[in-house]
Image 1: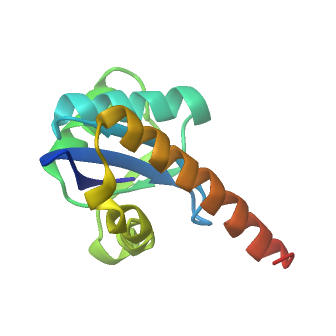
Image 2: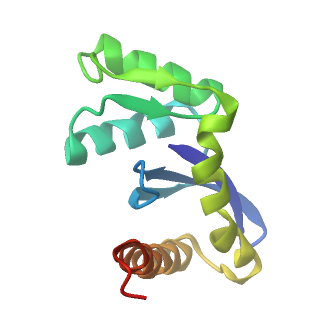
Length: 135
């Protein structure tokens, strides 16, 4: 899981993304703020959709760490290991590139979110086909 910033109509917004070990996108969420509350909501959303993972790899962003600890206190992610080793997050950091390339074209939060979801869907199909040897 990671967050990155993108500019929409001249203002910075934050894109939270989660991928699995194979690099396939699990979920994305575009927010106006990068804080503990946003990270908490995204982690809770992931737990609701996919259950409890064995390991979560993130960068050392304080907001994600505090959100993760808060969720553990509330009974979620109790058996999940939180890893913050720098090189383990490389897969998702490299995966941000295509999204950030289109930064200057985003005009509103809604259209940016729709565009990014479409890109992620197409890239997910491509990644699956590439692994299966059909492309």
